[in-house]
Each structure stands twice: as C-alpha cells, then as structure tokens.
Image (cartoon, rainbow, N blue to C red; front, top):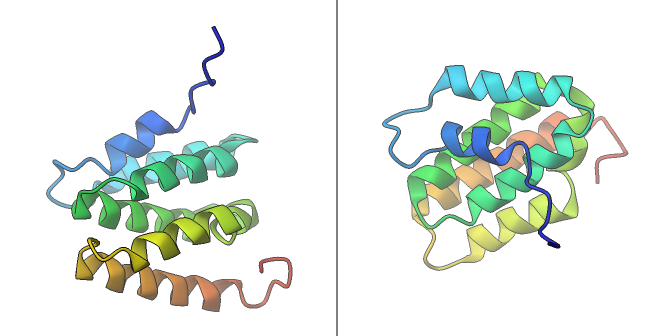
Length: 128
C-alpha cells in the first residue's frame, strides 16, 4: 500500500554490474549512459541505484559499479557530475573505502576514481 516507487534504473544498473560478468559489458554501460542522458530524473535515479550496488558485498559488483560511474561521468555531463559529487554518493564511497572487509582492489579503485573526478570537476565551483 505504501511501498516506495521502484527506481527505473535499478534493473539496468544491476544488469551492467552483475556479479556473474567476467568483464565490463560496454554495451550495457553505454545503454545506461544513454538512458541517463535522455531522462530528466536520470542522474538522481542512477546515482541512487549506484549507491545500492556499492553496498553489495561482492568485489566484482563494486568494481563494475565504479566503472559504470566513471563512464557516466565521462558521457553524461554536468547533471551527473553534480550527483557524483553529492554528499550521499561520496559518503557511500568513503564508507566502502573505510570498511575493513572491502577488497583492497576496490579501495584502490575508489581512490583512483575520486582523484580523477576531483581533477575533472575542479573547474566547476558548484561541485563541492
């Protein structure tokens, strides 16, 4: 009766970051990018879906999620940049990096991506 409305990006983000993938599926990643670019609520919705996938305990899911976030940052412009620099997304990254159970490769990738995004966003004072 009072269920939250399903996020339209949960399913496509889950497919693009599936734990059974053996490598990044660029067709799915670019499909997510296209959907985000054409949806007015795409950046917010996809970021919420990314945060859910970062909480997954499988390191491959976390790595694929970071790769998807990076592809979004490179292909979807300022609206996704705002979401990737938001407190909710950066807090999710910091929580994951600080968790002692997080795989070292995931921790390294988080630091790498955060540095890349910092450099990418540094010219925009609106991105904190």
